[in-house]
Length: 202
Length: 254
Image (cartoon, rainbow over all chains, first blue to last red):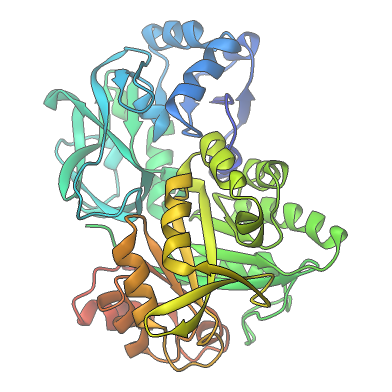
């Protein structure tokens, strides 16, 4: 069973419906008890960095999620759900989970529109079964003003918006995408399917 | 770099699409879910629903529609029309809409932009501006479906909504809307150059060249299209092929 962590306000239904479409059993995780029932975990991205950290702490999920990650549960963080895994964010100037080394910074180029909104290409940097049947430089949907800065060894896909930024990162059982696979059409669904097949883990 | 978005706009009234696709592939005439699904498969980059329901019942129906649409299309979609509170926004977003578009309520209560952007993130808050030309390089903001003048200057208002946290501006030229004479390129360019968030150009598309002009000269990040697509004068693959041949980056749909 796949668990989607419900922790803030915004569109949480679309990840749910994408997984349903793929024929998966899905539940929303709103408390600690439910967390033990799932073998795949998804942290969607909704709201702002500070309010998300606050909400996760309030419902007591923050620590428990970290344990789950250390236990090796396959995990997907989407957009803000990826950013929350890092040490620190410029958005609200506060600390994140600290599971991944690096920080979250804002796009600074004056010649670009912010948020980075729309379809952009993901350049594959490292082979992974997450990309099974997906061509290099495929378009995915993005909607964000901040991006992560981290060590090269975790970055398996990058995207350019005047600046190159990591659009997919993988560290052991943890996957993070800056784009929204649930909103990236058929290619996005394929990516989610690959993630849930778990073959990328080996 | 980011591709130019082609966005079909569907007008929904009391649960039915009123300016829907006019041809036989759609099994249930006026069904919003079928219309959205059609454009999703055709390669739309995003879809906008404009709820023009006059009744409270009609608005409630919209929330059900949103959920059904979210079950069959896996691209972003926006819902606009009559949104006036945080509660309205919450209902739509938690049921599967990715963004809401606020127009009249934003002018009457600019606070709503700030509060909703804080709560749901700027990326989900679109402010729709209906602009009417009132002089040389000067436009006024109109609200209530373009009926009521506000004395607000479009450029000043656009800057203000950005400061309040809007993530995008859906900019409609009242003068060009429905004319098929082309977008108001000057309007789009002026607003686009004055704010650093994406501008969706709307109103007046009549042929392929119009799309090219508003993207290249008007500096629009996306184009909203209604009749041209609904009446099958153009198709999304045709539009993307044309734009690509003319050097504009588009997401190719298969």
